[in-house]
Image 1 (cartoon, rainbow, N blue to C red):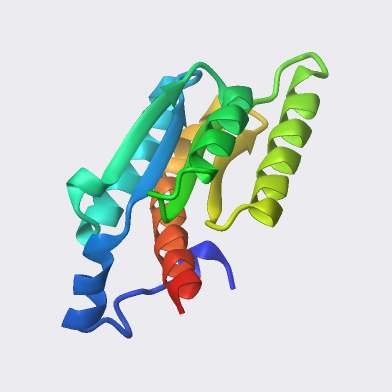
Image 2 (cartoon, helix red, strand yellow):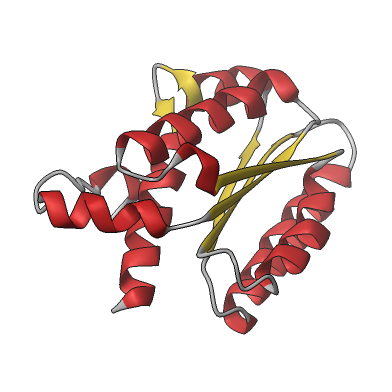
Length: 162
C-alpha cells in the first residue's frame, strides 16, 4: 500500500478524531531548498490539523540541511513527549557524488532510528534528479508528499497506541 492510498476518513468517527488531539508531533525541516521544504511542511501541518491534531501539539524545528535532520531526529526520538517525528528535506542531484552519499546517509540513519526508537520517524525527504521533480512532488501535479507523510504519521501513531 502506497502512502497516497491511506484514506483515514473511511473509518473515522468522532472518537477517533477526538483521540488524536492528544498526539504530539515533531516536524523537523531542512532549510536547504526551502522553496520545496516549506511546501512540504505546509502540507504536513494542514493535514495534521485537519485530521484532529491540535496546532499547539505540532512542534517545528528548523535545521540547515537534510543531513542535520538525523541529529535532531535522534534528539527528538528520545523525548518522551512526542508520539511521532516527521523529517522533511529535499535533495536534488547535482554533478558530483555528494547527492548519492547524502541520500544513502540520510535514508540509512532514519531507518536506524526507526529500529531503535519507541516512536515512528516518518521519512519525507525528496530525492530527485532535478528541481522540477521536487516542485511537482511538493504541491505540483504529483501532489504533496508532506500530506502523505502526515497521514502516515497519524496511522503509525494510532498503530503504536494499540
